[in-house]
Length: 352
Ligand code: IPM
Ligand code: MN
Image (cartoon, rainbow, N blue to C red; front, side):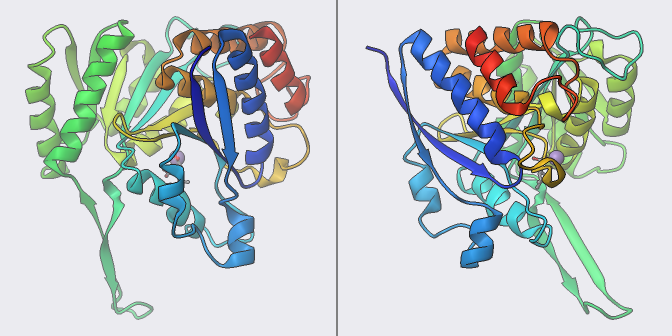
């Protein structure tokens, strides 16, 4: 008899519940095939709960979620709630409270998927972004003075700790070794302007690099990183960067791999509870129409199985995604797949 994993499921807002349902379907198929058990517990954290209770997260949310082996999240963001409340109150709060210090975002172009990059194919677009996930501009440091007056001052500071930066960089080097592809880590920064923060990053980067003589190092400013991601994506293997830059370049990454419909990520605490999510938002305009692409959520489920130590299940899910994308779907865009959300889930589940 295989292991049992306790999974906290947070469908969240908008299309979150629809895509999570397909992820769970595929996970069940993998569990049946590879002889492990998934024990799902659903949590209703999100916009609707906030609108009815006035509470973003209940007091015991972190302790309840911590009792699980992993968290599977749909999407956070509700059209009737002012931007920022749910994002900060739920998503960022959990990333911070659970110390999920890496946001791991693969950028992989699967065969037969259209990329906006001319003359680039799957052999060129296969890298992963290791985004620092608990510090930087996201830490919430700063404040406002004289709000609403002509003398208003707003300060938003980027927090970079040696410990936070170093553990993220070390994760990136370990990941490059484990990936065993080009064996290269690129630091994406802005050492020419952000001379305090990225000086720390740069020193930590080259010090950690000494422990990994088998891994090549490279550096690119964030603006140039955007340029190379479009012009020469094949140069990248693992990119490590701070929270804000990582947020920005992974949206670009999602586009070159075929769109938000396929972009998955994991908020990782290697010593704690990690949270896996499709990186696109709650897509209110597609909600409830059975047209949203569930593959990003299914990809997040795949990353979760890998992280939980079921690599065979992860590979089976990845192969099933590849097969469905290459042989079945007309497009990865919502409403243009040639199938509904639930049918895409069925196709992947039966391929597993
Ligand atoms: C992401 C999202 C979040 C972020 C938002 C919703 C707070 O854009 O996961 O990339 O900025 O991290
Ligand atoms: Mn983002």
